[in-house]
Length: 583
Image (tube, rainbow, N blue to C red; front, side):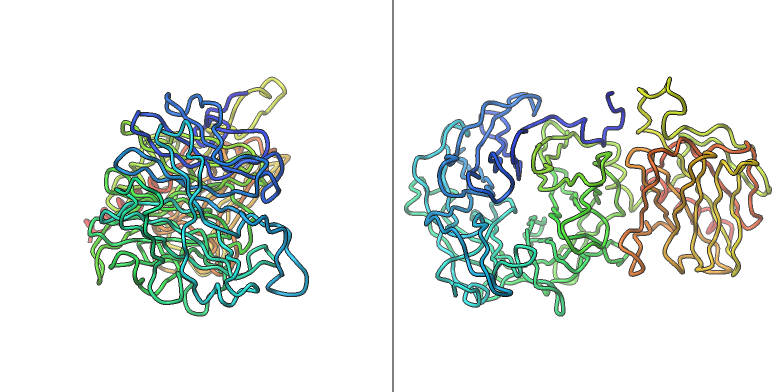
């Protein structure tokens, strides 16, 4: 059964499948092809035989060439390759190489040894002068300056621990290659890490690889870490160049939040790292997973993350994205980030999507991703992206999909709402993942629990939206046999204050989200997830056909589709403008 929802990962084009497949990163070569490099192997991540290969596509990811080996499968572990194309058209591939064939290292957090050896040894490169069809027979090691984290490792810097997922870039005519230093192995694999940049002033122009010069940044002996008081994990740094020449970086932690910083001197020093925030100052939430930011050709930014406060490797589904725009900060340009939208998901919540790359071609934007076995490329919906980037100005009520509107009355007729799943065996092959409903309105809450909207029939099928004893909101959905509910974090409602609210029931990823006063509820400090999943067996939320509406709600809108969060924010801002005009 084909899926009608563009966000479902099955709609992507397969790059690689069968065995391990990681970090599907793409550069556009000078002959017009897309060149993708993947770390692959016949086993699982970290097992012997892991090595990078490259593939070419001349039809924008529809088909890919047979793999060209950057390193052979029967050599030492070679892993986590990233590419950089220089002005001559040469493409460099940078990656880990266990050249000395080390088979174990002492644990840093207790007795014993770690036998996974794909994140140590030498950071090396090869190059291609035929647009990725073949790679140089020789590899070339890149010197790394020792930092405090290296000297404090169990091998005291004699054997270097590191890896990389961040894409290289050229800035002020110099090449920059990210690297994540590792302080040791143990529980959770990495027990400590921080970010550095390997800078080469002459790699973009020097044809002789033996003459390429390198320095390690930032200056000093400490790389990019978490904010003061944060955890020991600061990893997988993703860099962007701002219009004033500043560098922006975002990276993961195990503190429940992503970390960001700015450099105003080409990476030689960085502002004190802070946990990443939305434009309104609210902290973002993200687990121990890759989170990347990209600058697009229009000068705006996109940010990939998972929007919950986990502290481990789990729950990388769905993928959320924010749009970013540059504004003036106290020390230079900074990025203001929008509220997020869901852009990719799989039906199985245990599927984990990560290690993406962004590709632009002819005004279209694509992202790669992998679940560690299948790497795919997906085209992003231009309408969703435009709404993300224009979210800070959007001020209009969404009209499409409105099925009922209530103003100054205590009841309304509710037409039949879209189904979330098949209601009989005749519909088992029908796709419902583009379905959903939304409820949007303005509320002046009291201090007591109260129903906002009730469409239930005699057997309980329908919708109940109400306030909670914790000054939040709760929705209950039922088809008469399956009942699901989800509520917000406490204290989102302020008794006696007129506030905007929306609840989005998205039948694609089966997720319920609340938005209050233009801000998506992410659970705050109260819980890991602000959004909640509902049962795939919930068929619909149709009830009596009549809705009882609380007098404190005016207006109230019901939509027969899942609104984008950007649309909800437009509804909120339009209501603020309307209210201001009446004062």
